[in-house]
Amino acid sequence: MQRIADLIGAEADRADQVALTHGNELEKSGAVQLVRFSPPLVTAEVADGAACVEFRIVDGTLRWSCTCLEGRSGTFCAHCVATAQSVRVRADRKASPEAPPAPESTFPIAS
Ligand SMILES: [Zn+2]
Image (cartoon, rainbow, N blue to C red):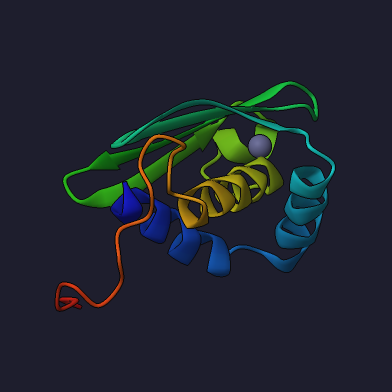
């Protein structure tokens, strides 16, 4: 679960500045609806022209798509950025209600 979030985050860090700014605004305004969060597949709907974003791990590589014009040409568009932010928030919050966070420093962390 952490891995796809990391890959998406790394890709978002390389996104175009305009897409980043717009994407962050979309995420903050609550426009992102994560539809599916089951790695290796993450899909979301973004209430900005009803864009549908999909992230998928293929052969260890992150692939993304969006139904908007930019996304269809392979650009990491604002909707991808917005979804990436949403995934990041979700991954940071990773503890689910029934599973309390694991104690830290119990296991050595392999990098
Ligand atoms: Zn898009």
